[in-house]
Length: 69
Image (cartoon, rainbow, N blue to C red; front, side):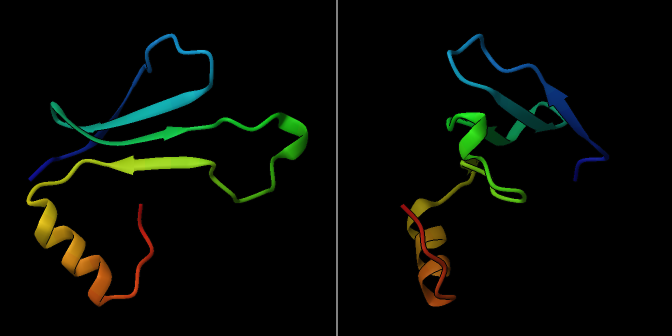
């Protein structure tokens, strides 16, 4: 179990982003890709989580009616 989340600098891409680690494990990255004038308060353009056992994870998402790509 991790004791804290640590923000980590994102690579120097052509778009903004942020990464969050738990200890040394990457947990979440968030990427913005829309021009500022298209942003809506409270809306995130893109985010991804790290996980294990893809078939089980997809099954859980589907059983709970959670959309995913």
